[in-house]
Image 1: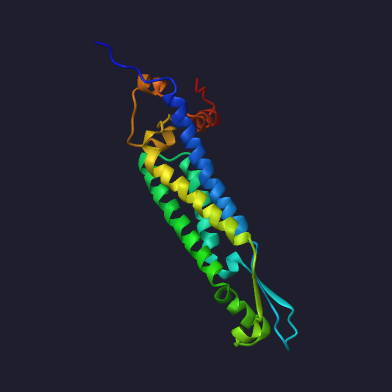
Image 2: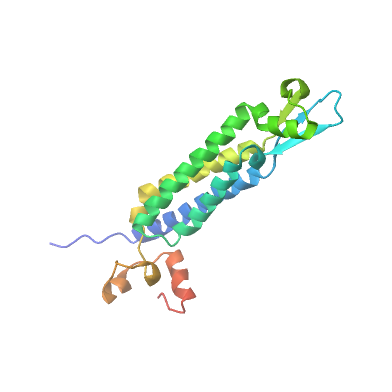
Length: 206
């Protein structure tokens, strides 16, 4: 009775899913960050005041959006070297960051007046925001951040669902408590991220 051998397509598939997950997290974080640093709300029509318009970016309206975008980017980078438990932790962190970004962005999109009220008060020196701002214009940039949050959420879910299937590799710096025999280490399939780790240490991954 012979033992069925794993198909040759299994290893490339796991390597591909790991790289794709890292890229998805990075893409989601970068898109959210780019969107948050741009103008989201423009208020005009201040009547007797000398101010023509007041503009508020996403990070001014809600600083937590920028913070969570940076967390997502950092988590995506860390995923490339994380081991099994670390992948679960990173996945959970990214999911929470994505939900926070998406929730804050949606709140601003549905109620832009609250987002711009403080900036109007500081600029015009008044507190009657409802009377002072006759017109509010919401840009399309919040949608970019919202899309980034959704992409990041997908990356976090992927890390949780398929992260345990990715190869461990031979990066000894991160293998404390996970010793392998020389033969097992040689037979272990490395993905392209682990291969770069080997090359950076001057070792031949082949």
